[in-house]
Amino acid sequence: MTRDAASFEQLYRDLVDPWDYETSAYEADKYQRSLQLLPRSRYGRGLEVGCSIGVMSTSIARRCDCLLGIDFAPTAINRAKAREVENARFEVASVPEGWPPGSWDLIVLSEVLYYLEPDALNRTIECVGRGLAPDGDCLIVSYTGPTETLLTSEEAGDRLLETVKRDREHHEIFSTSGPSWVATVFSSRHSKSSEVVGGI
Ligand SMILES: C[S@@+](CC[C@H](N)C(=O)[O-])C[C@H]1O[C@@H](n2cnc3c(N)ncnc32)[C@H](O)[C@@H]1O
Image (cartoon, rainbow, N blue to C red; front, side, top):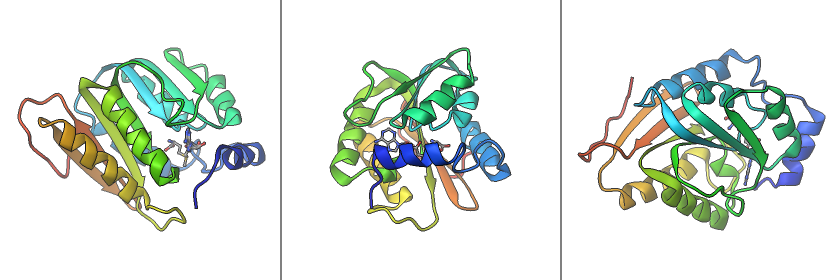
């Protein structure tokens, strides 16, 4: 199963906060611990793909000079805009075709990759490879429970990691996990190739 823009849009019309992002202690802990993994305290240009109603975006924006959040569900984007996060912009866009141009110091993909069908996933992974700044970091958060999608959330995240690792010899990888999620940071700024599993 893949979910298209229309089905997500309907979900957001039916429910203000379909996954209880605003109120769930589980989500708050996941956001906090995922962002703690980032090796830099501050980033210039940040991109969040599949930003939903902008809850995680608010925390990401605190670490960036400017953040662009994109999602293909217009109702979700309107709710994100209503938060009026000073240094964040939110736009309706679908990946891979609507991938925003430019170079990004931080790219965040939290629980979004596994909704893409295989070809769209491959093209999105190419966009990440091209769009991530030479010293940029990419945060991937994956749900580890069962899904009805073609690839599990972890499998989709692993595909992205395998590709960016292949293309960037020098990198570091940090991971941490919670009850049903795993967060991984691919950091391309380090001069030596190494992998650190466990993070902070
Ligand atoms: C499960 S939510 C994750 C929200 C947020 N990233 C988080 O972790 O709190 C997945 C979001 O990705 C969006 N999405 C799914 N496929 C997308 C695509 N191809 N392009 C843009 N947004 C997409 C959905 O509309 C939905 O808001």
